[in-house]
Amino acid sequence: MPAIPGQPVYDVDLYSDEVLLDPYPHYRALRDLGAVVWLPQNGLHAVARFDDVRAALRNPTVFSSAQGVAANDHVNSISQGTTLASDAPLHDRLRAIIAAPLLPRALEEIAPQIRAEAHRLVDDLVARGQFDAVSDLAQHLPLTIVSKLVGLEDHGRSSMLRWAAATFNVLGSMNARACAAMKDVQEMRAYLGGEEIRSRLRPGSWGDRIFAAADRGEVEPERCPVLMRDYLGPSLDTTIFATANLVLLFGRHPEQWDLVRNDPALIPNAINEALRLESPVRGFTRYLTADATIADLTLPRGSRLLLLYASANRDERKWQDPECFDVTRRANDHLGFGNGTHMCAGLHLARLEMTALLEALMKRVACFEIGEPVLALNNVLRGLASLPVRVKRA
Image (cartoon, rainbow, N blue to C red; front, side, top):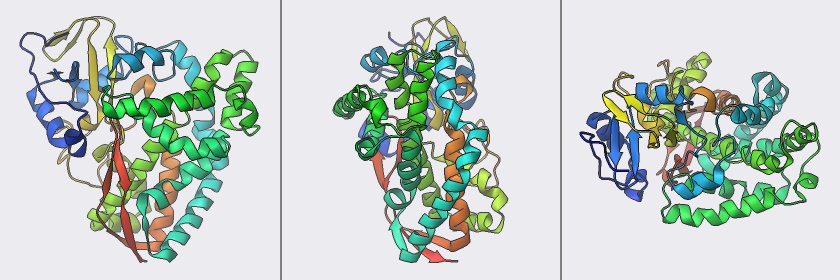
């Protein structure tokens, strides 16, 4: 489906290494070109401004997820009927099952455990004086506490990071990176779909509860492995990247860390601001079930749109000084977790983990001295593979 007459065109591959390494000038160019820009190299219509992205996310009847949310046809065809790639009523039924242990009231039970582990971890890292903000800090809570809650035994835990990265890589264009990731996705599907998976899950764990829901007739048994996957990617990489980005931003802006240390009430603001400025999820696609008009452009039914959350979160039309990190900014309406019916089900858990770490760090760390960050190249996620840190004790 070519560009619509009069539609602006941006002849750049948004999933290329060059763009992934420095996406923000490209997002700005897209916002400046128009409300909906044709990407000939990706075969997609890009929506990059805040109001338009949010409006689309809040209208799932027209901007549908049921035909998949990837930027390639293959993954869209094999992912239909998952929580991510479904609309109401199926989506609501599936989400209710996976979201149950992720609701604020349910998380109150595990909050003390997460806070205690965060304090123990930070004590250890501060005593060392230097560490990697990704592998030593950001990965710890998701890979220990969360994997235990999901109920995966050791083989699953050792593979979780690889599987999570692959899950997001295949949601971009089917480039070499996505093709390579398909092997890991197939391995994950085989593991979670195996006959022994239920016996491997700890009784009472989140994964076990999915199978219990099937026993009660709340979900078809064949959907259980699919729902298990919802606990892997979303509970890992997005939280890990957001946590490491916080350290990177506080290292670059020590005056903002001082503000938070002097006023712990700013912690929620700081988390929202980091998610706005360095959104872990770049964006997903939607399929038009009817003709839709965005600004002055009418797109025909059957069009596929790339909704760029990370661009919307830096839209000059929405935010003042959008490229500035400001913990006093009230950025609670950012799109880092998405919006509408498909808003991230694990957002409360992610906030709990990040808050616990910041509360522990602010008591012990006067400032972060950061080394050279190494970016993790992923088609759909943006975050760090490594960030050397030296801390000065409070």
